Length: 169
Image (cartoon, rainbow, N blue to C red; front, side, top):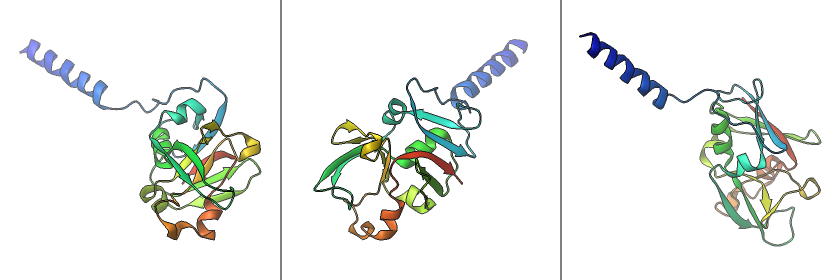
């Protein structure tokens, strides 16, 4: 009976270790930090914040898209992780987010957009890492290619570039 109880205890403990994710499972960045996420997070790696370098972001699920924007001349190819994948990596609760740029411009992206649209945080333009002088290091790209109804001032205003931080609400 004691062996059975001990065996059951060990089995349950192992299941917990394997099935329950670690609340601090976010790795530390190895390169320069390009994004800080604040708010109610279940995965942090810098106090109560989640910080990411470029390689951490580029390991997340995302997409590559070629489209025209009001800020570029001709078609441009953007690639980067989905915004929702970045927020999930930080353990942010589903909700609206405030995106803040290096110059302190900010825009709120509603929870519905985060959940239902394939918004990316572009890390690359035409295959090259985005530099600050070229709207980098990160830029919000709405899926203008999938839905022409998004090609309006409302969504242009939410397409923040030179992103430094995200506040999860």
